Length: 209
Length: 209
Image (cartoon, rainbow over all chains, first blue to last red; front, top):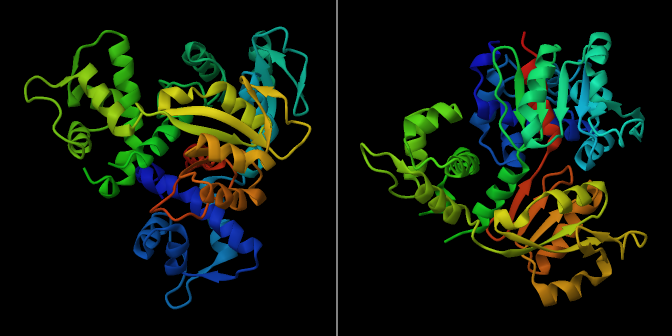
């Protein structure tokens, strides 16, 4: 599999397949088909077969897919079986919500620290972690080697912080900082979360002429 | 323009165009081209021209686009000039972050109330709003007619709450409740926010073979 050649749209659908198969497995369904998946996910059966074919041969003609086996395959493909160390940078409201509500382990990550520049926040506990000051970042990264940083900081500080973290070995950013980060995409992966874009999409759909 | 025929991928790119043009306008840039936009956004010039052609004729051969005019057109297309009343349902951590951090007015909405079922939270102030109990929902909707609900409630309660709100005239959901809502898409628009999917996408990109 050449992951670089997988299209953005396929990548975006993978988590939905995984989620849906997890639900099916959870309810005891053993077998499904591309037609059944298509109906439930609002896609076409051939699209689903094409998407999955990017990653190998799954399912059998006339039988369909074994739900548990396909879910497990997708788990490996998405990398959910890993445990990369992650840190949250920014312990404000958003950082707190993410620390408390995101089950990092379910996505292949292990939350291992929370940082902020605000001395008032440092030493306070969030989701079982004592917030550390950004001055401790270098020493922490040398010891723990986090691969991922969740950026919950103001836009103005995001790029500089990302560059500092990249130099410390971080190679993935989950960026909530209202900007698109510049990064060398051959070495660093960035997932920008733009909640405003999501709300604009809703606005567009509601603005029928 | 037939909005129903616009592809999902085009819809997803519109907010990025809008954001980027806003930044250009902000820095005083008067003119741009599909080539310049393409370079900055990591797309191709022909894709940008095709996307914009879905909505009408913009730009001039040899001149390119007038930044302010194109931004203003996209604003109207996305519907950002509107002021639809919105409510937040669920005043827990996530509801609070959204109330405090999302500039609804910038996206064509006007936050007009926050609701919860927890009597402990009711009466408390969040982002200038006194949290109301869900028992008051019917009376509130009769008076204020919110068109949009931001769902920040547990998955188990989401569908039932969405159905109740739909019956009260809500026609758009910004759904943070870890599930895909069932809705009659001819009448109700749903934007599901799955932060987990976003984190899985990052995991996938970091899991190079």
